[in-house]
Length: 291
Image (cartoon, rainbow, N blue to C red; front, side):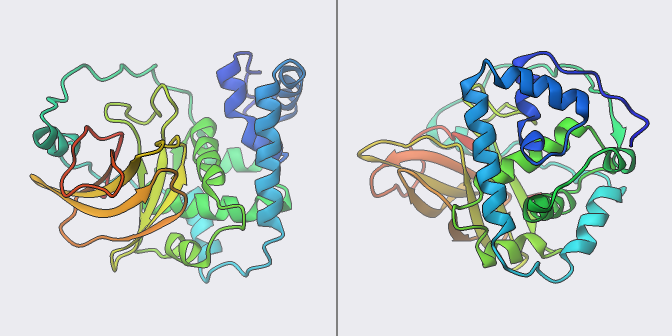
C-alpha cells in the first residue's frame, strides 16, 4: 500500500478521470467509494465505465502474445528518469500561413501545478487486474517513446491509459500497431486542438498516432466526430512552410495507416470536401509534433 493517501475527489471532472482505473479495479478504496456514489446519479459516467470494461475484456481475451521486449519497456516507462524531448516551433504556424488564419489568441493559462507522486510509490499503491495488461503495455510504451519523465501525477498517467484504451479497435489492437508501439525507435504523437497544451479542447478532441523509424505511421482513432456527408478528414505532414497530404481519412476515421517521409516535423488534421484537397483549405482541428 502506498504511503501517499490521495484526497477523495468530489467534482464530476475529477471523478471522470478515475473511471478508466475504476473499471480496471485500479483505484484506492476511497476513490472507489467516491466513484460508486457518483455513478448512482450519473448515467453518462456509468456508460463510460461499461465501455472501459468492454475494452478491457476484449484485450484480456485477445490471445496474442505480447511483442518482444514490451514488458522490459513497461518497467522502464514506469521507473525511468528521462527528460522530455524538446518541442520544435509551433506547427500551427505552418497551416496558418496556408489558410490565412493568423493563429492569434492567448493560450489558456495552466490550472497550476498538480501534486506529484513518484511512480514507484504509486505503483505499489495500485492494484492492476489481469485485463489491464494490453492497455497498460501500450500506454507504457507510449510514455517511454514520448520521453516521459520518471515523476508524473497519477491523474496524468491514467489519462494517457484512458486515451489509448478508447482508441483500441473493437477487435483488439492490430498486430502492426502493437509492434509499432513496442518498437523503441517509434514516436507516439499526441494530436490535440491548437493552443490546448497538454489538455484536450473544450470539445474533447484528442488523438494518438505512432510513427516508426522507417516512417510507417498509424492513426489510432480518437474522438473526432463524424464529419458528415460531403466532408472528409485529411491528414497532413508539416515541414517548414509546406503541408503534404498523408491521406484522406473519410468522414469517420478509425485506425488508419499512413507513410511519413523526412523531414516531416508535425502532423495535422483538417476537414476538407469529400475527395480531399491538394493543400489545406481550413485551419487544423488537431496538430501534434513529431519531436
